[in-house]
Image (cartoon, rainbow, N blue to C red; front, side, top):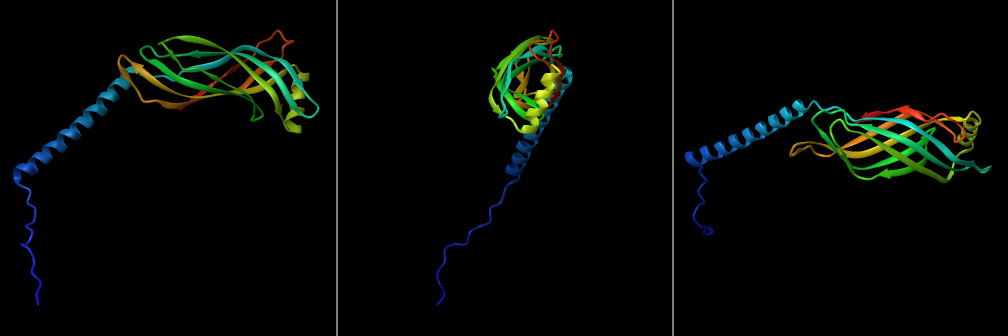
Length: 203
C-alpha cells in the first residue's frame, strides 16, 4: 500500500529584484574593501616608513668573576641608542626583551618597558644587565677567560618586541621586530675605552 505524503515542496525561486539586491550588496562590499586597501596603501606610501635604527655606544663589563667550575658572574652597563628616522610617523613599542650572548650562549637578559618614540626622536637606554651564577661549558668558559686576558670581548645584544606605527589618528597593526647587534666589542672595567657595535633591524 502506498504511503501518504504531504504536498510536494516547491523549489525556492530567487526573484530578479532579490538577485539584483544581493549583487548590489556584494559589489558595494568589494568596493569598500578595495577603497580601504587603497587608502591604507596611500597612507603607507605617503609616510615612506623607515626602520628604526639602533646601535651600542658606550658601556663596560664590571664585577667580572668566573669560577673554576665555569660559573659566570658579571654586570653589563651598555648604552643603547635608538633613532626614529621617520619625519611623519611615531613608533609605539610594547615591552622589548633583551639578551646578551657570548658565542650563542645567553649570559644575561632583561626587559625595556613599553614606550613611544616621536618622529626624528633619538633616545638613549642604559642597559644594566647581570649574569648571576650562569653555568658555561668548559670551551666557552676558556674562550671568555682568554678574552678577559686581552681586556676585550665580542658579545651580541639581541632585542625582540612588538611595535606599530602611528600617523595622526591612524595606527598600523602590531608586528614583530628583532634587533640584532652583532660584534659588540666590549671592554672590561679597567679599560678607558667604551663598548660599541652596530645593529640590524628585522621584521
